[in-house]
Length: 148
Image (tube, rainbow, N blue to C red; front, side, top):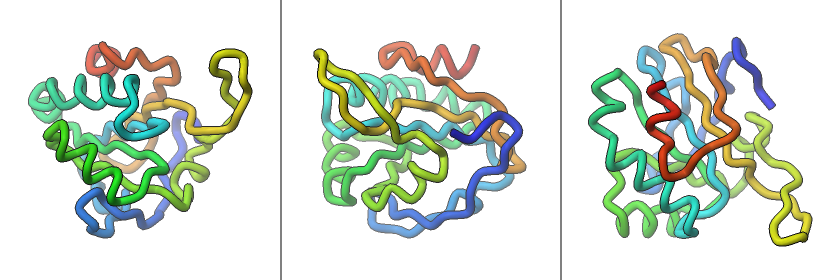
């Protein structure tokens, strides 16, 4: 996993709107980059909606909010439309960005072990350097974790 002080990788990814973006496109802005396992699941929906409900608080502090999952553009678009997300969701179905950040790993659910996205949020400064990592995400109170 990338660490505090690391530069973010220079990788092109597609937004839920089908537009190609690179994290370097956001230089000059602070970024809340949150990785989540799958669109339209209870935890991911709670997290996405918490950030959307508090979007103006985050932007007032200069943050650009970006969500990433291994879902397709179509699934991300449906997720964003269903909940009216004001921020971009990145469709990383090739897992290039997910792997570059090191957020793919072993997980357990109901006694079963499997591999998937480790729910993690990176707070990135205007120069593209990771300032903080939140790896114990409270999906219902995530904005408070970011702003505190």
